[in-house]
Amino acid sequence: MMDAPEFWRGLDRTARHALPAASIVAVTILLAMPGLIPAQPACRTAFVIASVYFWSLYRPASLPAPVVALLGVLLDLLGASPLGLWAVLLLLEQAAVAPMRRVLVRQSFLMVWLAFTGFAVAISALEWLARAVLDLALLPPGPILAQGLIAILLYPPLAVALIRAHRSAAAPEQA
Image 1 (cartoon, helix red, strand yellow):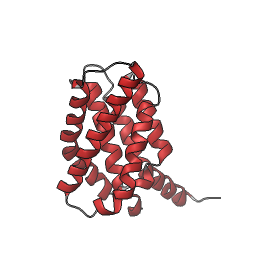
Image 2 (image 1 turned 135 degrees about the vertical axis):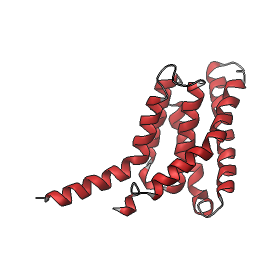
Image 3 (image 1 turned 120 degrees about the vertical axis):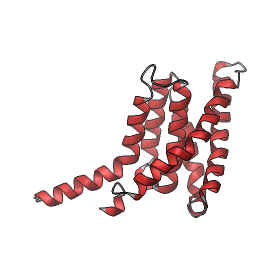
């Protein structure tokens, strides 16, 4: 039988490990509330793209692929996207970040942000292409371009907050 201090340490480790996914879910649901901010769907999607990139880069073990897929399904359900579209796009993002991780974590913030810019553009283009194919129509690029631009502009302030969480008492290695 586990004693009380060991139970609380285990619970603390679990909470630290769950922080990335739990924070993404909480903010995504918050951003789904009507009238909270302008351009909500684009902001919600941009937040998830940026968060998955950050955590896949700095704490990949805390954001495994099944969790990323579930985050994508949540995004689909909240944004009325075809079910599975964002699961696939976020998993592609995570898979593309993985081989670059060792190089990117040693780079300056500017280089990490530039790499994210490339990912945001690629994901936005893939979303536009997938929606066009599914709708059998050429869609206006404006909303997708806005979403990509919001993601690129959102990344720096979001990264500042996430870096603090990553390096703070919320880090699993601190337990």
